[in-house]
Length: 458
Image (cartoon, rainbow, N blue to C red):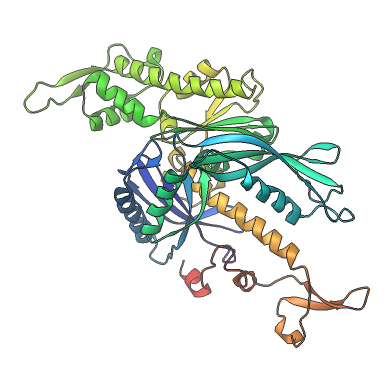
């Protein structure tokens, strides 16, 4: 176990479940799961928090379950997934003229370019959730993925901006805060899921991540290593359950159970002479349900969802087999039988199920390797992306710092004093034995590192 890494917690507030997972990367870069809890979600509809009190109750239940799995945990802040009909995206362009053209482009300048995009005009009532750079340009050089280290007068980029309804965002944050937690960051759910199920090869080949949840189906399209498009489709697993309930005249719990146990996304694959017997209500005779009829209902709704996926692929011009990586299906709804075949038939692209187990350490709970938890695990990975970015930024900013008068060399435990070419005494960062004391200086900006004695208990 690598005790120098922070413990990061993902909170997935879904329509059917709320999941809390605490994890830390080991020496091999894999996630060690330190705590896990889940609870049924009652206050969320179609990805949006509608009943704050019910949502708080469910979040606390999931937290209690997480603490039960590991009493040593101390959870104060979380990365939270966001989805819902209100999520929109737009493309913008941003440029800055550099003040210091003699030196190479720095991370600080890129951060400033991204920060400027948060001033983009968006409709009243909306709020920018995330700004994602696509390809950069430096003067006349285009399609640059990593501009740091280049030299030039002007640096710019195309950006993918994700927005959401202010009230919907406020409801999520309020639910988290009233549960006794702080929201470290809000992350679009399809991006979190993508991080969990996608490898570098997928990113280069081009893929569409289709996360079929309970209330929404989230879509993220990547091409040539760039996020090209995101969308939230307003149909998902709960719609299928409601269709079964209405079409077959059964209770919602019975509809959900039939979908999971006997459901198929392809009616042609269902047995024509197979039937499910449902107990009658209040003395009514038992009901016989045709498995083939059940499959017809599921296929109709799932085909509609996949038609939306095809529509969005056409919008960005990637529907004609240009995505060599095909479609990666994830989320709880991806576990339907024969869904891969239906997806390939409707979209014309290869499809597979995306499992988050590639990023998990060897001793993980089997339950967590299911597509259902891709979003929650992706939130932890997103947290580590932020952690690494902040670490590089701080290492760059504090690489050469002039020594204030009166500061003794003996106080500098993790730096060494050297003279530069002009004879000025400066501090040069030396290899550190422990990162924990370094990070403690910047606790206001970074994730709190747990005390060493608490780490030893884990």
